[in-house]
Image 1: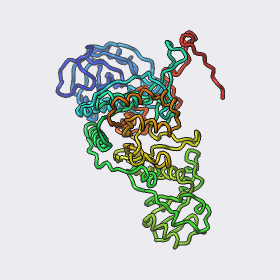
Image 2 (image 1 turned 30 degrees about the horizontal axis):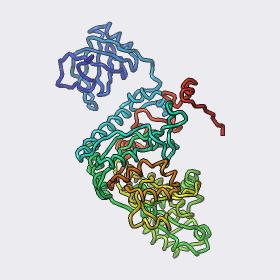
Image 3 (image 1 turned 90 degrees about the horizontal axis):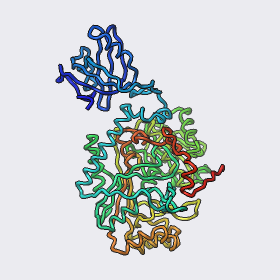
Image 4 (image 1 turned 45 degrees about the vertical axis):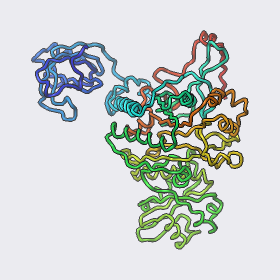
Length: 584
């Protein structure tokens, strides 16, 4: 080793030792005849001292060091006169006796500090420099610790980690596939897996009983803070189990991670039906750190001559506790926020429960105080509360009110990142109607089993068929989801039929799986956690980018390596491919 110790290792017990450190220059300070240099590595930071009286040439060499120079120093451990209690090495410093520059450095494009002056795009371009910063590195150390604990927990329950292929067949599973041309099979393509779904089911057919994998998945979809084109799943499958077994085991995994990595004991994991989640929160991933549940008002407000309510499929609202003192300007600003294209509300109705006990609304022309008292009773308001109401099509208005609830909750400080509210959401619809294609799609994927008691409804009321499916939600973020799978050919064929596949199409796309079911497939089910999302929650971050070493931007580009990019004509010729880029 070039060093005897790391930059975070030495303390007061090492006084008098001769040591050698290697690292990067964080910063230097000149004070009279003395130069202090902070040298940093992954493990911490140590102060160096060079003195003119001791060795003027050595001190002058130290003064020439710039930020991020890579150096090797040898010296003696001394006790610091001005101790820094904020760092483990803050009681000591190294009196340097030898200095070697291992590599000089250009001035970095932004400060390599916890609080940097670099913007997001600049830091992405120089990601290898951004990764030197403590907050980013600490996120990846956290991710590493979580991965180790996941493996430890699952290994203790007899799960076997099995790698599945990355070059697979393109199958319709929801998002678009990334495809890879095959040089040896001209005109044919591999796809990158959106998940290892069919392979983990085949492992159950193979008798592996319990499988897991921390695995890369790929989806060509529009990006946002919690999405990347390549992401990581904690992927699991089990044989001869029920839904209850899966919920208990992976609730146990979640508790294990919070206990071992964050030192927290989680409380209850409540369970909620999908239908109730949509009715009470307008979301299948409700944030239950705070209340503010929806109150439906059709029976209370209709028939009073106010056309917006009378013509609406659903009138629904929330009680913003303590917000009756919002000014008209604040309410107008909130209304404009709701009218943004991303949300699409047409307006916002409100009513105040004033401190003097009176009730006033923005629609007093249609509703007198006696009528408003019914609103107050429905929302269980107290003095100082503010009722916020939306009206419109049921599905649309619930989604809009969900956005309003989250925004108001954020403004009231109710979404504390240090508070964790887990929730299981159960019994999702098996199918959802797609207006664009005018047919049903699988809400999760085509291999999800319907509730046995609902199978008869597939032919008559497909929208009412419930799936044997479940999601784990923490703080309004979907951490993972899964289902009990179909394990016999007949039911799987029926499912493909209702998804619009002809028997020939189903055989071409998924014949390998249906054939496997004819050789003794066990009942099985599984779940997949989004590892990036789970890590970002542990790190207290809104975006998953900073828990990924080399993420893509919102356009799916890696600006550091300038990817994606064109390839040489010779490569294209080998692949027997020509491209025509449409301008539309």
